[in-house]
Length: 181
Ligand SMILES: CC(C)(COP(=O)(O)OP(=O)(O)OC[C@H]1O[C@@H](n2cnc3c(N)ncnc32)[C@H](O)[C@@H]1OP(=O)(O)O)[C@@H](O)C(=O)NCCC(=O)NCCS
Image (cartoon, rainbow, N blue to C red; front, side, top):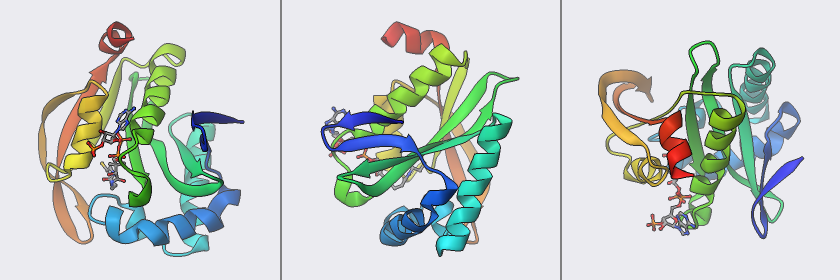
C-alpha cells in the first residue's frame, strides 16, 4: 500500500482517517509553509484536517485530485498532491510540502518523479504544472530539478493570508518526460 522513497521513508495515500496526524504535521510546519501553502491556513485542528482530506478523497473518487503523505520512521513529515487532475484536458498540477527537518535530501523530487511518471505514463497526461511564488526559491528549484520549464508569472493570481500573490507557472510536457527517462 506504499512506495518506498528511502530506507526509512514511505509515500502513501493520505486519507481522512489520518486527520489527527495530518493536523499535527501542519501544526509543526505552519510557520515554515505558511507563506506559500494555503493548507497551512485551512488546517488548524483535526476537524479542519479531516475536511481537507475528505475533500481530496472526494476529488480522488471523482478522478480530479489526490493527496499523499510522506512518513519518515513512521511519522508524517509532509506530502505531495495532485491539486488538480483534469483527465479531459490531459493536464494536472502538483503541489508539495515538507517539514524543514526533512528537507535537503531529495525526498520531494523523488516523490514528484513517481507522481509525474504515473500521471504521464499510466494516465496519459500531456502536461504537468507546478505553480509557486516567484519568491519561493526552494519550490522553484524542485520544478527545475524535475526538468520543468518556467513559462511566466501570473500576476495577483491567488489570495494567501489576505494578500493576493503572484504565481510562477512551470510545466513539463509528456514528450519531455519520456525523453528524460
Ligand atoms: C519546497 C520544498 C518541499 C522543497 O524541499 P526540498 O527538500 O528542498 O526538495 P527536494 O526533495 O527536491 O530536495 C532538494 C535538496 O536535497 C538535495 N538532494 C540530496 N540528494 C538529492 C537527490 N538524490 N535528488 C535531488 N536532490 C537531492 C538537493 O541538493 C537539495 O538541497 P539544497 O536545497 O540544499 O541544494 C520545501 O522547501 C517546503 O516544504 N517548502 C515550504 C512549502 C512550499 O513552499 N511548498 C511548495 C509550494 S508551491
